[in-house]
Image (tube, rainbow, N blue to C red; front, side, top):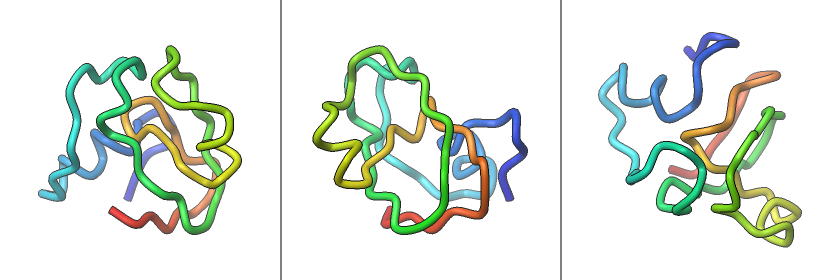
Length: 73
């Protein structure tokens, strides 16, 4: 479960799911993961390329859920 005001990375860590991460500010791209289904609001600082977003990837540290999500983590 991920609250609407919580990012995907923090929600995963809270339930014991360890995702790779580093800066937690959307700059480094370490927490980049494929989104299989659902929608997010992602406010990043350059850590992901437009073509990666188009391919369905998100940065877990700066993505907040807008719907139920399915991720390949």
